[in-house]
Image 1 (spheres, chains in turn yellow, cyan):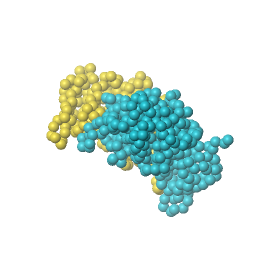
Image 2 (image 1 turned 180 degrees about the vertical axis):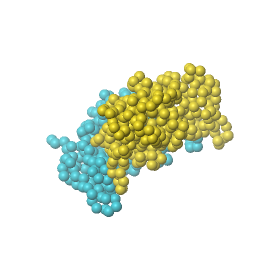
Image 3 (image 1 turned 60 degrees about the horizontal axis):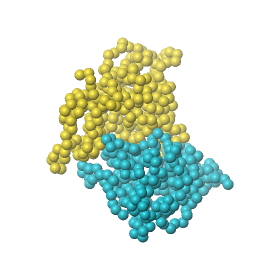
Image 4 (image 1 turned 90 degrees about the horizontal axis):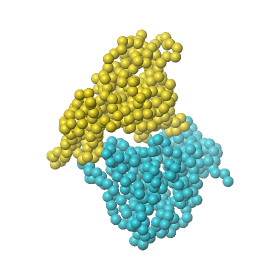
Length: 312
Length: 311
Ligand SMILES: [Zn+2]
């Protein structure tokens, strides 16, 4: 059943409408469990579109296996997604810095507060992101240190390649994930892929993970499925490789590959002079889980991130 | 005066991104004044340029106190101004949300770090800033409630109002907040405009800074005494909302006094032109902020008001 979470009038003959699809069996048990799958806070992150479709499709085709409520929120920033724009158009505000919102505040804060009120009380929430347009990410869960212990068992079911504890950027206090966790709704933040793009194999992997999680919560009744065993890491075990020169970055590895200490990651070149400005090498053994896709760089631009892998 | 480079970054195809500082006087790091961090802060740029001009004149007349140094950084982010983008053009990050920054982080985080390194030892810090919502303010000095804020010093600018804001998590990444944490007495000065120049309020801003510097014994400058500032807390402002979306016709400006029941604005239908809403003053008071867009959404904040202070 498609429902409206909030609707606010825009200046000229249009409403900003946030929609969700509530999936539930015909007969609900007493106090049914509820999970929320949300995505599209950032208008340039589209990987979640396929995941929402795939999860909904599988549920609709196997509705007899559903034993609770699944709320799908495929787009929390409809104006941004329509404008191929990460933030909220016009105000240029990053919507994921506006939570938990404020019913008395400007429009975007009202929208944020309505979203939080709608999701709060769920037994679990999964917030799907897809990096930005610069960096490609392997499917991963990012956990705030504050809730890492509590959320880790659920995160392990998500079928992701890695779990990154205490990653500060996406987990700071004004995000949807932080706000919901504060309100007692366990929320798992997923990053995968790259902006303005859908990788269907990533999406399938994540959809499988969501069904494993729902199975565990009793919302889905099916044979337990095997999943990917994720690498789990805290910040200290991650190597950041950043540019210290400006130019054009040409990677010489694929993302999601294992590297050894000393392996070459790529070059920053100067197209004007035809020279290599600097080459970059791995200083640890591990998995390249983030790799720069957008070639132009300044000093400070992220080129790659490697998670140390002790399993090998 | 001498011109200094605060930091410099190579760009693939633009000239180097260099932040310049103008140093006046020699001695204790007495005061630092900072211009635009965002690319739409044109009024702020204009104000800083006028201040540099004034300080040059004062220095030539020997009116900078001995043993005091003033640093003016007229612009932190001219790259965004030149491309008419509000934020860092490459990745759309807001440098004023990157403080305190790190020297091993993203580009904008490094820039924030470089700027803070250059300015954190000054006793007084003054930033010409803008609000995240677009609109016009009564000229005022703004401080974050960090525990280090000193509102009685803020009164010495002689602007009509001093506003104290309780920081939200997002504010902890701003320059003002981090500057105060470095124990600089940091003030943000707001005038009525951002992306266009209002020479009258710019002049008021320049005078207020020179008045402050004079009162702190850093320069000698003849000025009238300015206003006796009212101190207000942001949470005491009352918001006036729209009920209807449409074309916004404003009838009161920032600074105006209104009485309960006065007509403040009308909203007309964007296709048919008829009046769909009259916005009436909910209380006696002064318009502290007004939104400045020609179009409004449903339930937008269009004014923020100070309740009249009854004697
Ligand atoms: Zn995102």
